[in-house]
Amino acid sequence: MSSEAGTLHRLRPILACSPGQQETVRSLRNDPAIRSAMYTDHVISAEEHARWLSKLAGDRARRVFAVLDPAESPVGVVSLSAIDPVHGKADWGFYLSPQVQGGLGSIVLFQLIEFAFEDLGLEKLNGEALEGNAASLAVHRKLLFREEGYRRSQIARGGSRLGVHLLGLTREDWRSGREDILTAPPPHRVILEGDAT
Ligand SMILES: CC(C)(COP(=O)(O)OP(=O)(O)OC[C@H]1O[C@@H](n2cnc3c(N)ncnc32)[C@H](O)[C@@H]1OP(=O)(O)O)[C@@H](O)C(=O)NCCC(=O)NCCS
Image (cartoon, rainbow, N blue to C red; front, side):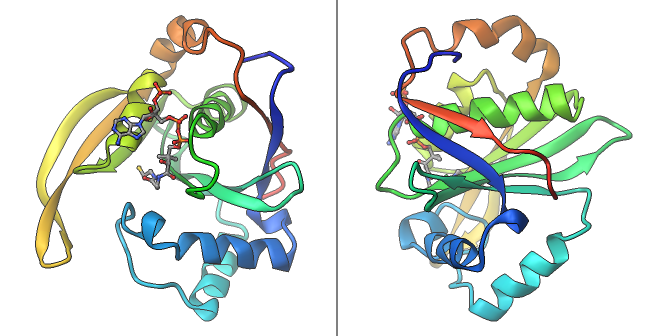
């Protein structure tokens, strides 16, 4: 992961992004391909987005980063939520524009995991993937998450119900396996910018 090869993407705290970048994030989140992978799949209005951003300010239990392409245009979001310093754990989530998927997701997740375990000092990261989301499951497994359970019939979606895969990664598993994950030079480089939120 230390290779200098590949295009450079940045993870910038969303509150440090310009209003235009924040609006691009809303458009991405409203992309049907992304909405369908999320717990809530309604179209997010400008007002709801603004409320969400203002609630993030000062919320130490959440860290939300926009994924910026080399031209500094947002192409995704990666976040930690439910950050619990008592038990050293957090939930994580992400999405990428369909135009940039294919290799970038793993590199972004790699940087987020490093941030969570090395910078925040967490011990455990938890993720969830909706039933049928093969790409999310694949990226979790590739980055050493273990499947810890499956909640059946957990959410309502389009007149039917979907289960949810529960995935978890310990700092110990990460430290012992991180070097072996990406053996080939990665197609992208990702830098996580300072924790301004
Ligand atoms: C999940 C997501 C961020 C992954 O991004 P990405 O750039 O495609 O990730 P990567 O290419 O690094 O890794 C994805 C892996 O899944 C595999 N994959 C992709 N689609 C797949 C499918 N339908 N079935 C099985 N594997 C699949 C890829 O081959 C890749 O594995 P590989 O590197 O061993 O080839 C992206 O698909 C996305 O934004 N999806 C919509 C939102 C979402 O699902 N978010 C996660 C919610 S938990």
